[in-house]
Image (cartoon, rainbow, N blue to C red; front, side):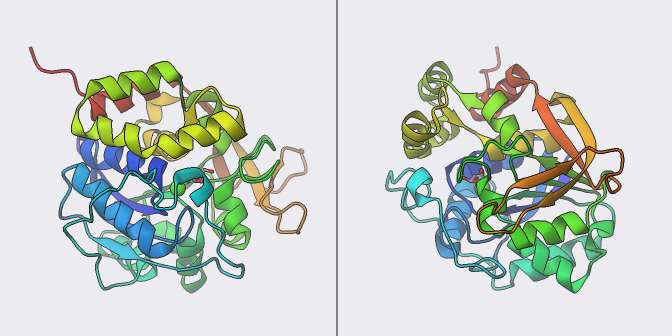
Length: 316
Ligand code: BDR
Ligand code: CA
């Protein structure tokens, strides 16, 4: 199969890092560039983490472009209480060997697809600030992409950063609204946190399997999710830590893993009490659908893909 040419926008924390491994080491994609944005951690920290993750995946020449340092209109609120002060479980990872590019992420998001219209797939794993900024310049930018996958939102109203909102949308709801206003269901697939909470939870058994696999990527993926595991146990109340960005990446790379999806109109609330809530309109009178909303994926299929990439079985 021809590898899927990819651009990835990320606020690299511990689960983004695993998504980068899937993309860069899974054999199904050719990562052309990574753009970074403030979110889980401040911009410089996330950029460092993206470089480390790509190195761990053996992708040492993928350019990394830093982007926006804060949301469009709001102050930056990070998720370091979940992913650690360094976003990677505070395990003391050494610095990457490479430096980021000089260019800006927003320019990369605009210019890369212009070089090969219709070829690139964009996967967003972060607050949508960079993407919205690119769309403000060119509202039709998505026409240049083959497809866009966004990990964002909590369409079932069950949130992780507030009772009802998911982090990426909550962090920059105005940016999410700009993206949704440019979306069409044939071009944009939305993967909410509900998919992660239901189908991508790393149970203690899965965590042990990853730890025992002992390959460099499995060990990395296990160790960096240390603080996320504690957060899931103590605060979210899941049966283990969830992997929202890896499961979104898996949807992009392996659409066959999707078991339930709908075409629907989605908007985002920006009010104080409702900040970042998703408004999913299923009325007959609803505006035309703007996204394909993934609702479930195969849990066993996703985890098998994860283990195949991070800890491939030795050839006989
Ligand atoms: C999203 O927020 C971050 O914690 C994760 O990296 C993911 O992108 C999940 O709500
Ligand atoms: Ca992320």
